[in-house]
Length: 239
Image (cartoon, rainbow, N blue to C red):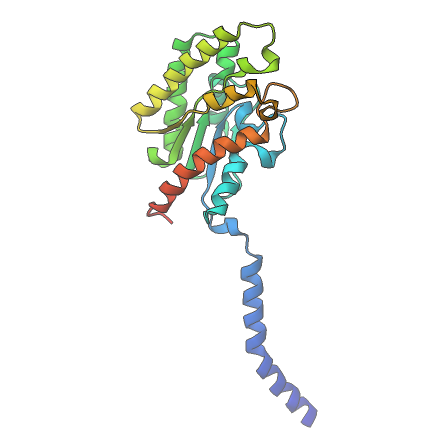
């Protein structure tokens, strides 16, 4: 009986310590994303990150930069595929499953419209519809949506033998459209096109296929976007 009594006393003594340690362990094991902002990225190969590791694409590099600023972001939901045009992205948007609301939505689409020789005037209404979708996904808050301009693939080795000046002119025309529409809805617009044109003299900005951006180039886009997103989230009443 003496031994049993001592055991009971010992258990009573360590019980509070045990549960304290258990609580600490549970908190430590809890994923930081449980309380993170959620992020939806819409686009094509430039969003999914063709030819680079997933961690090096634009959405994931943006996420990592924001976490360095103390802003926790859930793994982004990416609705994008290499080769998609605006109508193909729209079809995917119409059928995908979504969260109720996203804290951040990015949209970058149009290069394949230009590549396939489609008219810029047809791009405008299709892009506007996608942007309206993006705003809706962000809870109708335009401050939580970012539009990125279309990169200029005409400077890449892939465009060898093509009319690079014509490509650049068409890309600029498309970008004038998506920028105007973005401003119409009060959306933050990031021009990454000039940055991509630097690949002419810096092959490290391109992936191995000589067409798509490298992780180094995506890092520049993420850097530009992270400053805006950080300022928006800092002043957001939601979290």
